[in-house]
Each structure stands twice: as structure tokens, then as C-alpha cells.
Image (cartoon, rainbow, N blue to C red; front, side, top):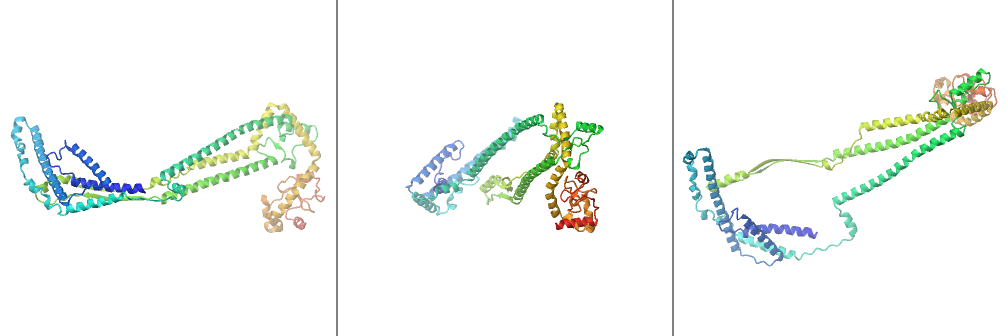
Amino acid sequence: MWSDIRHTFYELQEVLVDLKYAVENSDIEDEKYGDKNSKPIYERWGRETKRMNISEIGNGGKELPTSAAVQKRFQRNMRNRCKHQLRSGHRVCLEVFRKGYRKCTTNFPSMIGKAICWPYRVDIICELDLFGNPDKICDPSAVVPQNFGETYVELLKAEQELFDNSSQIEVNYEIKDEQFAKSQLKSAERTGQAFKEDFERQKRIFNKVMGILQKILCLFMLRLVYVSINYYVKYLNDVEFDNFYITKYFKHVDQRRRKQGVDAILPLRTYEKSKYIDVDHIFSRTHQESTTVCFSLLQFLLELVTAGLFILIDHLVVELLQIVRKRSKIVYQQDGEHEVRFNISGVGQMARLLRTTMHNFNIHEKVSTSLSNKECLPNPHVLPKKMYYQLLLLYLVIIVLIYQSTTFLRMRRVICSFLYYKREKQRILFLYNRILRNRLRSLEFLIHDAEDNLATHRIQQQVNVFLWLRFSCPVVFGWIRHFKFAKRTCMICRGLEDSTFTVCVNCGLPYCDDCAEDLNSVCFQCGVVLTRVAEGSESSVEVYAYRKEK
């Protein structure tokens, strides 16, 4: 605060010192006034006088001049300036004649040039007082006001009172919370610097975290090696590990047994098809593989939702910044003309001379200024469409890889079977014998699977609205039986209903034809002999009503 006050007083001192210098220190009366050679001397003298006056103002105690002395001095200064102007005109006149003679003689031969260009030698005209007596012309008594001296002395008194009293000014202030004041008085540059430093610090932390994550992800390559070695060891030591493939050698063994008249395995039973994979159908899956693929797709779906949210947030931020940039842009346009004309009235020689001289100082310019806050507005960058297409293509490739991951993982068995073909034959023979043993105990396994699926079947009957409509109003909604969502599933193999389905007339449990044959056409729950009931018959409706009552 005190520095601002002191700066204001200093500017006022400079204005007053310049005024005093113009009034008091321009009384040069010799012929050297305005001479180019002597100009640096007078400039140095003026600077020294100005410093002396400033020091005197700061110290105070200077004796004021009288109004008559100021009046006389200022008139003398004005007279000297007028005479200097006349002397300048005399020099200009001589220079014009000299240049004209030089230019004329260069255009003609020397003998003819002197005869033709002699009028330019008559520079005696410049010595004549064309404007009259200089003392009379430069008399400032009619121009300078009579009270100029008194006004100037009053100004000096006001100056002395102002600056002498200003030395006693005291500014007292107290900051209650110095830390808070310092925190609030930060400049825009310091605030921007602090923001930049904070951003750089957060960036370094983020880079360190990402570097650590990248190193951790690199360790997953070791996991790949570990999984490969683990599969190799289990393939050689555990005959049941990853052994559910119907290969060409498996079919060869089955065909040989069929020719020998012994019980064969192929074709597989309906409930066995979900447990084993025929290598000729590379896109088939077991029930466990289907569950794994569905879980992986669900997990990737969550990642897609997260990525979509980030893309949506980015799009919203860009749209918001674009609105701010569009609505907050301000353009200041200023068009106009600057014209400065010097109008000098009078009919004398001095008036004509000044009119000719000042004509070159006339200004007429057109001004067009345009200011904008465009540089201060945000400049958001929209993600190109190519980026979205690349992301979409990448996600589609990942989905395909997840969906066919089981097919790619089977290459492990193919590689091991190629390198260890004898071990592969042992594994296939073991699988063939295991299926034969399970066939002997198939009834026990079928009943166990049916008991596991019974709860799911009952929930399906209660929740599935389409099944309820199909059997409650078979005349109206019987047509929906052609769709999967309105079909029943087998109690054993969970296969969808077809024309060969058998329904228990007592408890209403559905069975496919193969599973009913494996159960010896006896319902595992009530023990009633299974008979096929045609769709839409009264027995079928009665069975559904009986099942609802139970």
C-alpha cells in the first residue's frame, strides 16, 4: 500500500518538475540555442537541473521566486524561442538556395550553368527581415497572461505544501491472519505454477503406478510357462486329465468291436453327448466348457460396460467444453478514424510558413482493432471415428477369441498326442473302457442326474409364463410350442422338447426318447410305465392340471 502511494507521489513530482523546467530553465539567450553541435551540452544541463530540483523538492526548504520575476523570465523565454524560430527559417532559406543551385548546375554544362542558375546565388533575400522587426514580432507581452507569474507561484506553494506535508504520512495496518492473507494474495502466475507442479506430481505418481502394473503383467508370461508345464506333467501322469475326446482312434476301436460282434459305444447316448467331444466337430463343447465360456463372456461384458462409461464421460466432457468454447467466446471489434489537423489562422508570412511546416504533421488514419479471448478458451479434442472403429474391431476380436477359446485350448492335446502318440493310445483306450463301465451303471447315473434336475424343472414350470399359457389355453396359445422359450426339457439330458418326447401320465415329468429307453420306459419318480402322449390331447392337459395341483 505504502509503495503505491509513494509511486503516485513520484509521478506527480515528475510532472511538476517538467513544468518547472520548461518555465524556469529555458532562458538561453546566445546564438547557440538550437545548434546541433551544442544540443548535447544543453541536454546534460537540463538533466542535471532536473535532478537538482527533484532533490530540493524531496528535502524541502526552497525559497519561492516572486511573481514579477517569473513573469519576466517566462516572457524572455518565449521571446528567445521566437527568435530561434526566425533564425531557423533563415538557415532553411539558405539551405534551399544552396540545394537549388547545386541541382541546377548538375543539369547544365559549367559555363551555361553559371549563366542560367545565377538566380539561386541571390540568397541575400534570406537576410531581409520579411516578417518585420524581430523584436516587435517576438514580443510575447500580448500573448502571455498578465497573471501567469502569480498562478505559477501559487502552484509552487501548493507543491511545497503537498510534498513537505507528505513526509509526515504514516500508514498503519495489521494482518489478523498472516498465513490466510498470504494464501489469498497469490498472483495468477503463482497459482498457475502451483497447478502445473501439482499436475506434474500427479502425473509422476500415475506413471509409477502404471509402470508397476506393467511389470506385474509381464509376470503373467511366467504363468503361461507354468500352465504349459503343468498340462504337460498331468498329461503324462494322469490318464483321466483332459480325456473326453472322441478321436479317430476311438472310432477305429469302436468299429473293430462292432465287427467282432461285441457291444459298441457309438453313437453316444443323448445324456453322454454333453460330456464328450467329437474332434470332427471342432466347435462342439461340453457342458463344463459352455459354462466357462459364458462366465468369461459375462466378465468381459463388465469390462465393456466400464470402457463404454469412460468413452461416454469423455464424450460428455468434450461436448461440455465445446459448449463453453462456443458460448464464452467474446470478440471486441473497434473501427474508427484518427484525424489530427493543425489549423493555423493568419495571413502573414509567419502564418504561411507555419502552415507549410505543420502541414506534414497532419494525421488521418483508419483504425481497426479486433480483440478476442479465443486463446483463453478450452480447446477440446474429439476422438476420431477411426479410434471408435478400432476399439469396436478389437472388442469383436476378443469376443471371438473368448467364444472359441475352448477350441484353441484343445491344441494342447493335439500337440501332446503328436509328440507322445503311445500315451495318447493309452488314454483313448482308458476312455473307451470308462464309457463301457458307465454304460453298465447307466441307470444309476441317469436317476442321479434326474434328481439333480428335478428342482430346476419345478422352478421352470412356475416361472415360465409361456409354458403356462401353452398348457392352460392350448387352443389359443398352442402355436408357441414351436419356440424354444415355450418348450419343455428332458429330465435327464436337458434336451429341448421334440415330437419324440414322452411324458409321465402320473407325475407329468418329460423325457426324451433316448433317455426314456435308458430308463427302461419307467418314470424314476413314480415308477409308472412311460407312454407317449400326443400334443394337444386331453391326457396332456390333464397331466399338466394334475402337476399344478401337486
